[in-house]
Structure formats: C-alpha cells, structure tokens
Amino acid sequence: MTQSTADYDRRIADLEARLRAFEGRLPPPAQRPRTAEMAERFGLLVAWVLLILVLGWFKPDQMFAWNSYAVMFGSTAMIVVLTLGLLIPLTTGDFDLSVASTMALASMLIAVLNVRMGWSIEGAIVMALLAGMAVGAVNAVFVLWFGIHSLIVTLGTGYFINGIVLWISGSNVISGVSMDLVNVVILTRFLGIPLAFWFATALTVVIWYAFQHTALGRRLLFVGRGREVARLSGVNVARVRAGSLIASGAIAALAGVLYTGMRGAADPSSALSFLLPAFAAAFLGSTTLYPGRFNAPGAFVAVFFLSTGIMGLNFLGVPSFVQNLFYGGGLVVAVSISQLIRKRRPMD
Image (cartoon, rainbow, N blue to C red; front, top):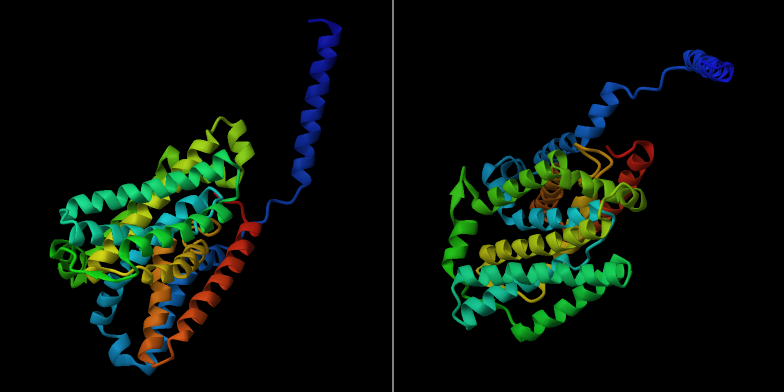
C-alpha cells in the first residue's frame, strides 16, 4: 500500500468517526404519539359514529333503523364508483372534471341503445364502457400530447359530452331500460342491501389492493409525488398518466351503468349533480386511514359519511339547498385538512 493510499484511508476513517460522533450528539427524530396517529387515521370513522348518534338524538326512529342505511348504501353506490374513478388521476396529480359527464353519457347510451334501438342490455353496457374509455383517451391526448392542464381539458370535454348527451336524448328522459339491469343493480339484495353496494365494495377492494400491493399502484403514487423524479427513475410517466385518465373514464362509465340500473331510465342532466359529492369524498377520504394520499377505503368511508349527513338533514326536514352547503363546505374543509396533512408528513 502506498503512502498516499494509506493517508486517504486514514482520512476516510477519521471522517466516519467524526460523523458517528456528531450523530451521537443529535437528538433522536421526533416520533408522533401513537394516539395522535391513530386519531388521524380513524378520526373520520369516529366522526361518522358521532354524526349518527347526534342525528339519532333528534330522529331516533329513522336514524337507528337498519332499513334507512340499507337504502342509503344502495342509492349512493354509484357515487362510490364515481369517486373511485376520480381517485386514479388525482393520485397521479391530474384532475378529471369530466367524470360526471362521462357517467351521464354512459347512462344515456344504455337507454338509447336498449330502448330506442333494441340492443341487448349486455351489448349496450359494453358500448357504454367503451365510450367511457374513449373519453379518457381523448382527455389523455390533449393533456399529454398538447401539454394542456388537465383541469382545462376535462372541463372542456365535460361540457362537450353534455352537449352530446342532450343531442342523442333530445333533452328528454328515456325510461323503459331492461329490467334485467334493474334486477341486478337494485332489486336483488344481499343482507338486505342492493347488489349495487356490493359491486362498489368489490371495486374498492380491487383498487385498494392495486394501490397497496402492486407495482402499478406504486408507480401511480410515485408519479403523483414527483413526475420528474419518476421519469428519471425509469417510470414512463406519460403512459401512467394516460392509463389513469382512461381508467377514470371507464370507471365513470361503470357508475353510469349502476345509475341507469337504479333508476330504470336515463336523465340527460341529473348525473352532473354528483361531481361535487365525488370530489368532496375523494379529498375527505385522503384525510383518513392512509392520511396524506388519496386512497380507496378512505373515499368509501367518506362517501357514506357525507351521505349520512344528507340523510339526517332530510329526516330533520332541512331545505334541499342545505345539501349544496354541506357538500361545498365539506369539500373546502376536506381540501384544507388534506393539504395540512400532506405538508406535515410525506406520502408513503
């Protein structure tokens, strides 16, 4: 060993020793109290129970009746599905404001094809799902190819789709959709709850598993955390973002299938009212169970927390405009809490 090499090794050893000594003088990293972490993760579940108890104090017969919740679970299943579709692009840092319009398009396509053109209900559903994927693909082209912000693109495509829905429907409600769909979605029940709820639950489990236990889910989270870092790490960011928008369109179309089955008809405008509840639930869900990031179980809980509040207000005879106040206020509060959590802790 030469003298210069020996000197170099001694310097490295000296630096390592100094570093260890310096680290020994540093205080250990602050650990969040276990109780605070648990309160953050499960606070929304506790708030849901408290909400039921408070509303039940005024209307015990309705709020403590199982049938009330069975009806609510079935009637809001399509909001759960719509919110889950919204979560995927949100995870990658994109917004999809066209999901409610895609839901309306899928619903109207099923009605037009099945009622007016005599298609089988299965064929109409397949076409509706393909239409949802096509909407997502168009959004992806404008967002990624032309570099336009997803808010602008999806806002524009949403209005464009609304025009198509009004055109193909003649601005009329189309009723008489096959009872086969109605039976599967709302009339058939398990444990007293319509199957629509169980479909939404199954989709929640699938998306949760994909996010938590698959490479695809980790790539989605990685892209949302930092696109440039993800790109430098070898992730095809454009492909991941495009896939998230296409998946969002397909799941929004699935929500339209459930919505049509629940009503046995298609309304050209009513589906648009579900955009605000879906966004409110998505952001509120990001504050619970897996705080700091969008997650399927949190969104699932958030939808029914908000729906319970609306149901209780209806039982109390509160005017219908309060629903908008509830959802709007819920969205602002949820976004604020979500941002505070994201700043305080990294997404894992």
